Image (cartoon, rainbow, N blue to C red; front, side, top):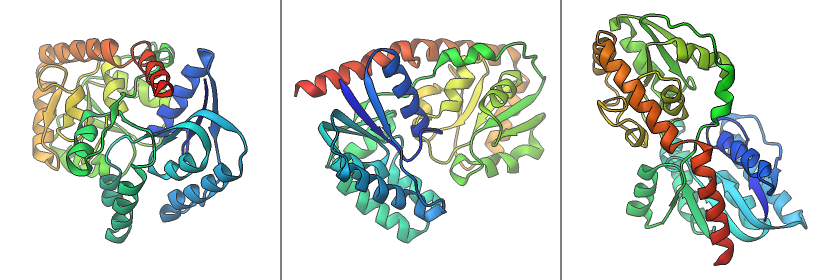
Length: 316
């Protein structure tokens, strides 16, 4: 089986997932290539320039593949024009909602129009969140295959010899509006502990801080299936997260974590303080979260599903 992966970048959220999937498949003997093209490094031009340059590369390339797999909407154009028997497009989170949160109304309107068009191009669509799957079915009558993004648990072998720091709260993610970092900062003065923001640290440093913390907070406005929640679960750290997007698929309230309403600094501070004062509950949440992620969100569990997905696609 010969595959081509297309992504604006192979790091971060969906791009990082694409890179991990590439690594897992190549380890298992699959022939996978990555399309990498330059883009204009200006906020509103990154995705459009990638779509244009990658499309040109797809049109000009004579190489053919069994499966062309694009990751996120900007990859759809190259996916369409590259030569392959079957086409797949993966979207993590609702693309138009993400653009609407980060950009102007005019750009958001263009994104919605583009989204509805490109979702008709691939043979199959996949997403990592049941919430995203439900949204697209209800709003655009489009069917998505559910294939969650797992953790590479071997990477955590280097996160050792970490001491717990009492009443430390960690935020791990981008310093951006959709991640709700401003909500946490507004709540910070009411929290009975020290908040550490891991927004521009290396992954290893961020994981060490996460593991040393009493609680990980995920105050997002919009989300798909956040990696930070899965990482905290694996590191046995209880999580407080907002009830948005795919977060409730990971955090079962009062079982694997604590759910709070979005845009509510008061409820966030209250939940953090209550959990800091209840060590027994915090420990139970951490144990249940760890069990959940090991049973459901590792490559040992998910990779066979991807392989079966590709094999079934080529049979149709």
